Image (cartoon, rainbow, N blue to C red):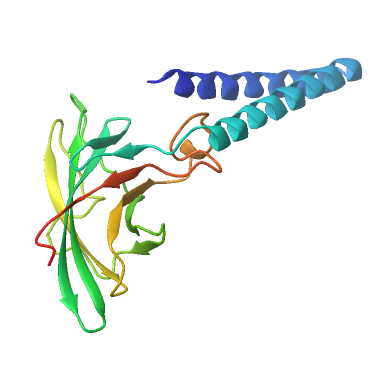
Length: 198
């Protein structure tokens, strides 16, 4: 667990404690205490939000190389290759992703995991069909297991893929300072190796 994760958890516990204290103070009719605690809670939230937004705007986007794993806790995914299949209507690209687990004991899955293919101009595309493999990004993994997923994407004829953006749900990553998924921060781009490009 990173420092940013610990800071987020500590902030949540602090705010919950402050709200409990405000409730207790209100029951006791200690209105000055309620106002002071509410002011502190609001200032802390405002400060946290300011740091979150400043970090998101100032930190550069993260780029991962082909095959480099991007981990969300113990659930990891790597973009491996993109292979084209030209058609008159555009370009079909088959992207190979490798899903793996760093967990030592538990089985896990990422039910909210999705992937988008980003082209060199920054436009993103959802998969054009179901995976071409029996496994999907949200399938369950045993401790230390891994499997590959093949996803098809349709791009305009003149577009070339730059990499894959993997989404793993909005919360809590959206409100963790310095995370790739934090509010207003561009998500990490996992570059792909282009195969058989003609």
